[in-house]
Length: 206
Image (cartoon, rainbow, N blue to C red; front, top):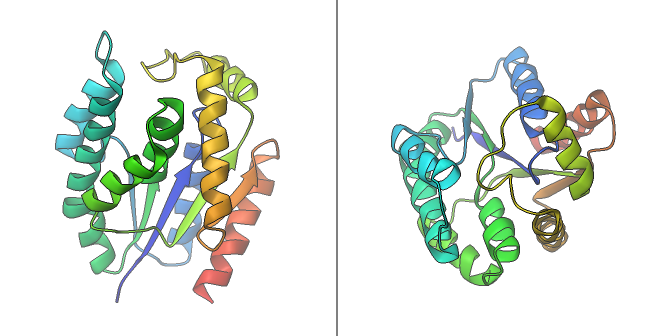
């Protein structure tokens, strides 16, 4: 029996972790085994790459950044995601390669097609069964991040224009693959968003 692969996407500050937590609790209540993970940093090697990507001081070249994300993802898929799916588990990941296509392909002004190609190769073509995109404008998302009082990492410190370009790229990706994406207005309440996620999942599970 193969499992189900669910990813959460969106710019920083839209509430991905909250919704992923609620979905994990819900799936466990139905008796499913759930593996919760994140990118970058879902493995021991990934934690080291995450430190380089998010907390290293100074400039990181855009192509180098994209390749580091892809390296993290290749190891993550091979050592954690694929084995969990093969065991029949539900895998919930906070970010996957759509983040690279949107952040590096639009925000960093690389070619979205090139970034996607690198990541399709890195993951062996593994696509999520469901990608949940929480959509919120960049200014509102930044206000939410600042309200938490946590320090911002290297990427979170980027200008609003970067995040708005990234947001538009996410929406473009969702428009191209409506059967895989569920786009949710993140201005709604936590409960309203979770209800939409569970409704879509019900249609997938039958």
